[in-house]
Image (cartoon, rainbow, N blue to C red; front, side):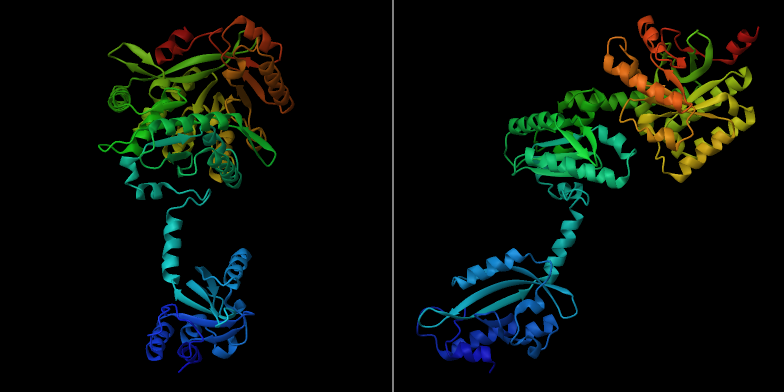
Length: 562
């Protein structure tokens, strides 16, 4: 019989199953002890914490022999990741004569981790004095590891928030709980401007700010790069969730977030949906968010009549119009001249339009471009514009510019077509490639830089369009071979009345002069704005004050040359 069982048999150790009745025989008590010793991981320590007994299960699990543990403390199996405070609380509990129960992470002799569910019982003599401690453990390593795997699958790695998989796993909530889905529009631009480490640090800072501003019983999810969700407990009122969102929006937009001495101020757009048994609340909330973004709203509540059918019908109708324009050669090019301060044309910017035969009207891409991208029609539109524009100016031999988006640079067929057309029409020295600042490709991409260098070798000029429309990164001016910078119309508009805009535009123009970069002031709408900007010595000007876009056709080239 082991020492532990002898102690049990001699009533020196009170077995947890032992009751206060005196009719339990020592034979039965020994059997209880044998059952525990066979099934559990058992150790006994004196009041100083030195081990006086270990059973075979502990030796087998820990990898230590009995002789390596007897007379030592449990420090041999203590895991370094276990907080010191846990052991302090453990000893405070058992030294007061109380039972401590809890889960501990342990380490084997060969430094492997095992996890146990522990009950530590103080053993007292007849005088009530503690004489030793018995620890009864059960190995839960496999359960613990499975739980960690599940937690990893359900957790966003950057923020440690529950992720979209976790939200889908909480599927019951989708029909019984109101949901808010939110996005921070400025993050889209920042994501492609700053290194990933910086971006992740910023997302964590945003998360740390938001969490204290939502109730503790609400769940905050990160669904994707720039989409989050808030889910209150079941049966919470919709007004409570809406109030939480309004409060969060107010506090968030008043806050400045600083990362590595760079200060950011953000806006937030929110879509809300009431719980319904008939529909998926998460999908409804996402549709409400999409509606808010499309209609320039801060917050939108899902309404079936406003969102579902109208959006679907609108998408189908525009998809039909775009396909018809592509099929019937109704993708057209317009041109708007860019002039110097004397009104002389420097070059012409090419603009896309589609001709709507049903309405006998030319439609701006503002109305259909986002749908074209979603319908995988964008690249066909872009390639038709490239063909028509380079053919037109290849004949006229005038200088022109054309706008390329990040989607164009990512599309191998579009990249190859542009080079082919420039060579075919010997138009490289005639064209300026405009890069939209808000959609700029990753300037650290070797493929992007290599392609820009290839275009430069063909004689192309490179311009940044809409500079100042978002989080302008002056690093573009250093990292890319920029020839022209176009200042966004949001800074030019009302410049004669807005001193801050004037100062900012003046600073940009002065910097460009020193870097030998030409400056175009866009959206000059009236004489007052033109006079003000011309005083700042911009090189070129564009806007309705000078001319409106006009359609470019080969017939117009013939008329021009007559």
